Length: 229
Ligand SMILES: *Cc1c(COP(=O)(O)O)cnc(C)c1O
Image (tube, rainbow, N blue to C red; front, side):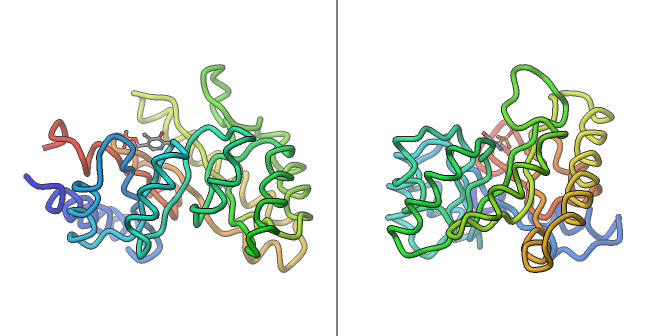
């Protein structure tokens, strides 16, 4: 199976799951996580209709975004201060922000580039020590502080579920959706209107995420790896 047909299959399955849970397929964006592949595979996914890609390394983000400027590039990796100008220069959306000091640097870099940077706040819903993200009880305060930065727009929340247990995955995703509703109710109307994205779900757990309200699923192996055939 080609990358192109695996991408199409994922999109078709996402649409099916949306219909099963009473959602519109257009409400869920499939982000093809291309961190393990090169430009040829990205080109194949583009040929299959992909327009959103995710990268977790700044170098790869910058070079692939330059090679495929018509696609929308998402940064989903660990943020390091010194790489923030590169990330802001190439990312349509940063999914993995959970520190105010990084938000402040993103604000400065975005101002220099004359843009407003869309970001998501990463939340460690499951509380696992190995996972990054802000604690759920601190997420609201962080969102409000970030929303006050003039060149940052907080679009919603992101999480990674614990691996391997669908019930625990579902609980994390439902927890993130409930937290987003709660935080939205505390925001000023303009900030609340922009705060409408939930990035959750990967190759093995996106079904649970879609039924819990994901608006973006981040799919790597199910698009780019033969292990998912
Ligand atoms: C790698 C990665 C993904 C995609 O994972 P798959 O299991 O390959 O679908 C999604 N989100 C983040 C943050 C990642 O690092």
